[in-house]
Length: 359
Image 1 (tube, rainbow, N blue to C red):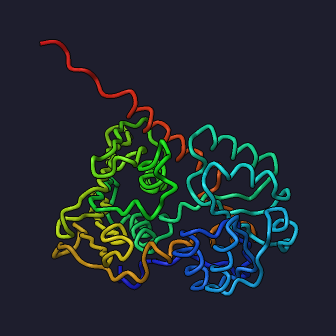
Image 2 (cartoon, rainbow, N blue to C red; image 1 turned 30 degrees about the vertical axis):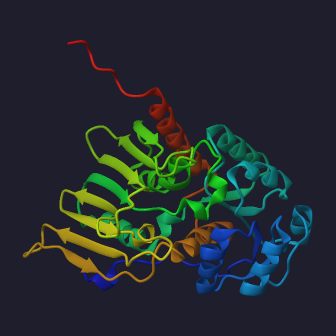
Image 3 (cartoon, rainbow, N blue to C red; image 1 turned 180 degrees about the vertical axis):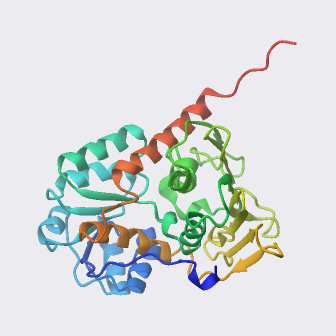
């Protein structure tokens, strides 16, 4: 199959509804708004509890209207608007309770701070009949869309192995709100990989995990390194390994996802994690064993995780809300299973491994 036929971009809605933002923090600045501009989505208003922050965002991104309270936001939003909610996980449920019944909302991950909050969020969405999705945007990164297209076409055969490896030096000081939290690395970072695995392999039977802090970041209570095995029986083998404290230069930094199958393999470097926030270029490589001269090739990918993946997540919700599709991949009903997998990882980490038998 010619490389030009491999799909890399999310399908956009025919008639994008307007967007109203609740929360105008760093992720909205760095990814939401730049991506919406790329896609031609209209942000018609926004609210943040920090008025100075809201004013800065209005001036930089030409937001037509700022609201002075949550109630004002909800009362003034157009009837067909999508609410783009980007607030700490602990604040999500209270906001959802205030939304009018039947409205659509894209909720920045995670789906609460733990599974109990996720269940509460799911219950509220069902009771209020909200069309709600969690912003697990890695599913919509151009390199992941390309990998999924190749795998669904059977190009690498049956999936035997999926692995994530992140070895980088993450500047945690950019997110000061994370430092007092009891859960950080898995809940706020590796959750992306857990969710992505579920999108390819389904929900695992069980999870083995260990998450721990690092001496270089003693104030980060919620962990800076994790090892996660997602158990699918004999196949596929799934492994997530992260170390955010590799402070030894960029030469040995790594950030990749690998898919191995019966007929080929794909390995993708997700350059955003390396030398963050500047990142390094992504790289998409693949090998097809049925080729006459099987060797690793490079597929040119247009766009990256930030910011392109974010309009894909919003487009998915818009198309579902508009009736253009009957599927909503990151619905709250699906995302609760990602949160359950995260919960299992933390439980495994706390319970520890099997002690050695006496010799």
